[in-house]
Length: 184
Image (cartoon, rainbow, N blue to C red; front, side, top):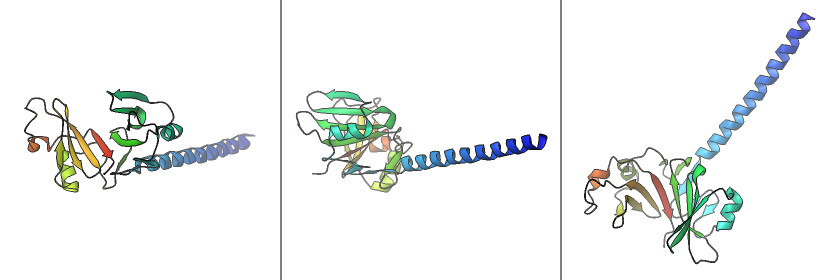
């Protein structure tokens, strides 16, 4: 009787261990898939394409768990906070195709040149992409290091005048968002 109980316990232990291993494999595979999301400048990521993917298609794939923000009469932003991605559409367009996407540190992916969405400095960006075209607007709280189809956004240092830009001041700033946009 005692040996039957020991065999039963050992069988249960082996089956449990196999089940746990399978769960770990699935979780690891899912993590690898998520970490392999590639942001392609001027194009998009995964099945989401700039200029082609509609708001309806995004909602079909990602659901309606987003925050909708209207930016004056210019654009509409769908913010998928948990995924770390926002999609932008021009207001007044009946087809509502995405023209820009922004990715923050919650997004698990990287650019096609290997830049992740978290922890990268402007200096590291310049080492990979070269000298940027800097953009901002009067009174904005951000500066963007722009390249063809992609921009890297940092917080503006409000302790110094906004203009002229002192690019050396921003070399050690950490990128807070990556933006991709259509190339015309």
